[in-house]
Image 1 (tube, rainbow, N blue to C red):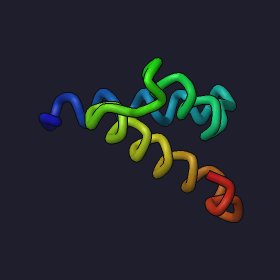
Image 2: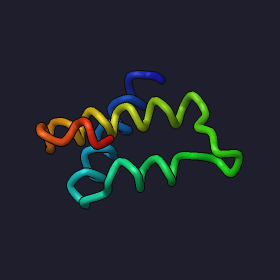
Image 3: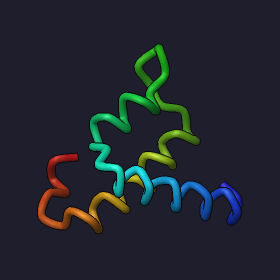
Length: 63
């Protein structure tokens, strides 16, 4: 992921957290019909996980 893409998806992940999306919801949305995430979506999920962990420090184990 380029620096511009990283910045874009970090901001989007923080937006998702602010909107109250859960890790399960985001994982479902980023997973393809075959039940697997591609590499790009895995990176997006990791960015969401980092943002969600900062906003919910005691609940990181629930991801």
